[in-house]
Length: 257
Image 1 (cartoon, rainbow, N blue to C red):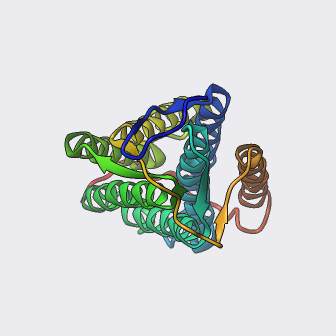
Image 2: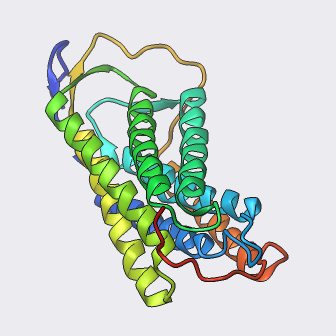
């Protein structure tokens, strides 16, 4: 193996297996979020905040963040990579909170609102980008990052567009076949934003990696995240569709205000 030189541009590779897993978990999280969205508002017109929280975890925690983290683990460099645990945890919490607020703005207040949809789309899109780049800066490795701002801007545009599509689909589709198709579209959109964002960075070899006692890593972490996320989704689906959280709902037609 050729020794690395300080200042050398590092060429990344991807684990195609983890790339596939990143799409599958984004698809699954998006599908459960769509199912939850149809139950967010009860027959009395009041939002069910417990279901909103479940939808936020499904979309933000699984469909977006878990996809992002598995995608990060799929990214391979000729240097070891670990991840700053506090920053990674903050990015997870941020993804869930932002998704919850966006879902509530779009359709958690009695009916689908065009104004709320636009506000939620902008918030969610920018939030996803903040989460994504926060996750990149959590990388602990013998390399520094330089960004192509044009590609960064493209990733932001993709994120906002994807968020707008996700929120519209969440409150305007009811048939399960439509929701499955919509979840696939959402999964592709989230993955596209992630991998475009990753391509914005050039990795430059440095003398040494920063010392970080609170870093996590490991070759099996991608499978661990996938398995944990899958278990959480199964639990959310069971709770929302088969428990007391599943309050009677009325269809939310696409009305604007």
